[in-house]
Image (spheres, rainbow, N blue to C red):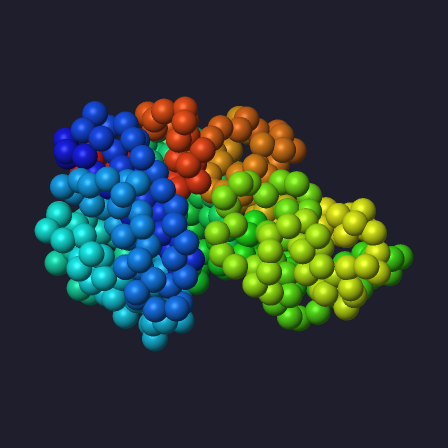
Amino acid sequence: MVTDPVIGWDVGGAHLKAARLGAAGSVEAVAQTACPLWQGMPRLDAAVDETVPTIGTAPVHAITMTGEMVDLFSSRREGVAGLLEGLRHRLGSASLLVYAGPTGFLDIDGTGGAEERVASANWHASAALVARQLDTALFVDVGSTTVDLAPVQSGRILTRGSNDGERLVTGELLYTGVVRTPLMAIAAEVPFAGDWVPLMAEHFATTADAYRLTGELPVGADQHPTADGREKTESASARRLARMVGRDLESASMGDWKRLATWIVRAQVGRIEDACDRILSRGDLPDDAPLIGAGVGRFLLPALAARLGRPYREFAELVPTSREIRGLVSDCAPAVAVAWLARRGA
């Protein structure tokens, strides 16, 4: 068991997340920084440099990732190797541990040949923490881009998929999120002005626009430029949404655009609920197993848990931390989880 402070890093394709656990094991600092990796490795360098003043330093760093999937890299193997080398260069002489899913942690010098286990293992870290703390649960992390689902029973993670390809098939990974998902990926057509209108297959608007119009988008969740590079206001979001149905903002009332946004949100939430129902239909979890919510989109989950007839708990309740950063702890669950697991020698 590590008794020194530990910093956990979750290197995503769009964001860098970090969490620092102090010597007493409490989460002391958490940060999320925009990191558009598809624009090149200097973006990771800049994100690390921006994060360190907030997160502090530690002699031990634990690393997990999903950023190896960006099209900067020709393969996931290349991506894992490239990201680890970039972090080694940036973090200096600290001890660097790399999370490899069920295998646990590997020293960064021992990851050669283990890239498949390291790739996109961040969901497993979060689920492993839940499995250590609760006997049974359905863990759901609704992020800016994806949703991860993992049933836990008797200290075991009962997912049927082990990598992204398998988890897409099993419904344990959904490529839908509350910020970055293009609206054309939510539905093929929408109800508007008394008709079913096909959505344009263009990157005119994202789910951040829909949730901004419903008033549910959390402050600070939308860290990237909008689809058109313009402002993040209600009227600008409505203008982008109007383009999706071949219209201008002025062609309908703001109430019309908000109703359309509400329908789109319901369609997305329905997909998440269907995925939960699919997993629960396996019969692995008792009826009173709680839904554990994480990610910037977890605001959707209390109502979903109620519809499923299950209690709801926040991921941040499972680790010691202060009230002031509890929201960030749940936002950045994988970074917290790898730091927590590394302290316990998992």
